[in-house]
Structures are given as structure tokens and as C-alpha cells.
Image 1: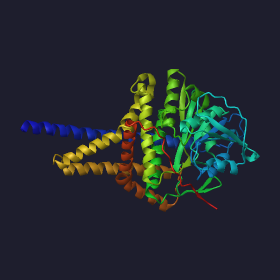
Image 2: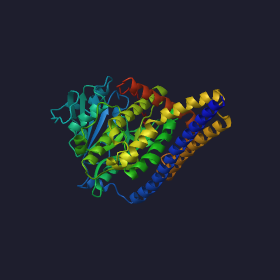
Image 3: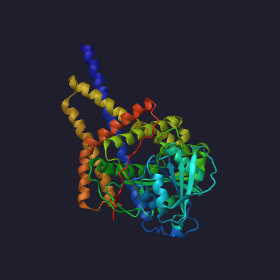
Image 4: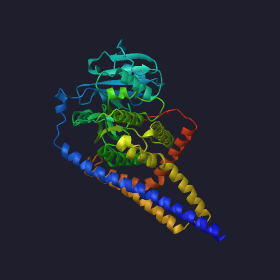
Length: 477
């Protein structure tokens, strides 16, 4: 009996050591990324404080851009969003809206509001896609940049590939049609393509913010507000952490694996050479970035991936848990699929920083973290019920994790206040601070649960992208 007790005690000690070690490892990585992000953000703001982006408007060297906006059942927001895309401060660009077999009135709204008629524009099929039912352009000269494609439903990746086939410019900008862009978004997003210093810029991304309860007028965001509902409000915090304290650091290291599908620019030639968007994954945005980077490394072509910390794009976040769960379970499935497709890169020195750091990091802290946390929680509860754990130690560990989570959110808030200051109202700052206190107890368990659903869906072979019902933006009269 003594021997068994000793063995059990040893097992518990090892378990606690592993859990504590994992927690310290992930927290340390967050702090390192936050420090790198802060330094790079200061450097970026200093270098760009005297930049006149309007020079790009008249420059013959301004990159030519094709905006591709897939749309599926976006009737609530599509009019405002297309208006936003057509009124950006940029000269050399076109807008391609791809209606992916919507079942609502999206096409009817587009045809009526933008005076669309069928056109005989030729499509050079470089990537096989679902059938195109019709190509439309406007009779109104004010909308001459607009092309609307009506096609059979094939999913977001298929719709993006249609846009790739049609795009007439050197660079493509893929955007969720439910997003609202700042008027200078393209000017800022195009800048990295002009300053690559001998390396080919194959992609660049910008910061995405939450637009719920913000005021939109004529396709423009005119007033920034913090959502009253708790779920989207906490997502404001989450996006601040992800974009200001996470991707900024990975951009500095040139190890970004993900450019948000909501708003990102790509070198069209490299995207086509890499095979376009993969229709066999729901994480098509991440998978394309990884595949393009892998293509450049395997062909020994000097390259880089850019990142812009400016808030360029505003999107509608899920306001109820049902939609939120669909979104986050899909994100997890996309992560699993991308890491699976490119498992050859894991700890492979051939792929340099990506193989030795980026892919292992995503595997350990993005893919495995929810499973490790859930399993750890179950084992801990069992040990507590059996009286095998010290309650004082358990609660001290919980407090440590809780205060770290709150502290990290406060750091993100502080970074936002010292840089872009998009939430100037004191009441909004206090709302976000309160959300930071609530998040570890409410929001984090929801994200873990949604990730577990993603594991289950992947194991059971779920393929669907999932409907993302929109409520539409608040419009100012």
C-alpha cells in the first residue's frame, strides 16, 4: 500500500509539474511576443509618422489591386459594404464581388442598387471552380470598378478562386464582404509591396477590429463604439491582443502563418503558382499563406510577408453563442487541416524559422492548447474529488492564471491607448477593463468548448463552412 501511495504521489507531482511548466511556457511566450510587438509598433509609428500616403494616389508605381469579396447570404450588409469598397482612396483597383450561390436577396440588391447588366467579359480559367452563372458590370460610370460574379455555391475558397481567375491586376486583396474598410486602407496595405529591399513581398495583412454598434454612413465608419453585449465586447479585447500583441511580433520575426481572411493582400502570380485557395479546408486563408511561404522556401526564392498594425478593417463579430461556436469550431478545424497538410514542415530546418518556430508554436499553443487544458481540468477535478490535491495550491494556481490573463488584456488596452486610441471615450475604456476582468471566467471557457467541438467535427468528418448570420451595421441617417 505504501508503494502504491508513493507511486501515486509521484504521478501527481509529475502531473502538477507538467501543468505548471506548460502554463509558464505559454505565458512566457505571450510576454516575449508582447515585448517584440511593443518595440516594433513604436518603430513602425516613428517611421510612418511623416509618410504622406496620398503620394501613392498619383504615383505610377502604385501597385495595381483587385479586391475579391466572396458573398453568401449577405443581404443585410452587402449594399453598404460594396459602397465602402468602391469609395476607397486609391486609383488603380477593381472590385470583384463573388456571389457564391446565395439563397437570400443578395443578387437582387446588387443588381438594383448598382444598375448591373450581364457582360461578356472573358474568364481565363487557371483554377477549376464551380460553374459561373453570370458576370455583371454596371451601366453607371460611378461603378465602373465593379464586377459582380454570380456562381454556383462552392464555398468561400471556391469563390476566391473565381476571383483569382478574373482578377486583372498584379495583386489581389481578399476581403470578407461584411467588412468596412477605412478610406486609406489600400494606400497603407500597398506600401509593403513598394519597399521589399530585395525580397519579394508575397502577402501582407492589416489589423481587423470589431464594428458591432459602430455607426456606418455611406459605407464609412463614422463613429466607433464599444458593443453593449458582453460577447462581442470581449471579442474587441481578443482582437486587440491578437493583432497588436501577437501578429505584430510574428511580422517582425517574419514568421506569420496567418493573414486574416477578412482583409489581406497577396501576390497573384505566387498565389496561382502555389495552386490558389484549397477547397478542402475551412481554413483557406491560413493554408494559402503557409503554402505560398512553403513554395518560396522550396524554390529558394527570397521573400517576405508584410504586416500593417494600422486598424484598416472593421468586421461584425458574432453576438450569440450559437454563431460564435460555429465560427470558432471552424477556426479550429482550419488550424488542424493546415497543420496536417503541412506536417512536413514541423521542426524541419529546411523551412527555417517557419519549420523550427512558427509551425511548432501553432501546434503546441493553438492546436493542442484547448485539449491540454480540458484534459488537465478533468484530471484536476478527479484528483480534488478524491482528495489527492491540495486545495490551497489549486486556488493559488487558478488565481495566478486569472491575474495573468487580466494583465495581458490590460497590456493590450494600454498599447491601444498609447497608439491608435480608437476608443477615446472614458466609458468605453472602463467597459473594456470590466470585460478583461470577466473574460477568463466567461469567454475563455466558451472558446475552449468551441475548440473541442472543432476537434469533434474534424474527427467525424464535418466539411461544412457554417452559416454566419449577420444582423447588419448601425446606419447613421
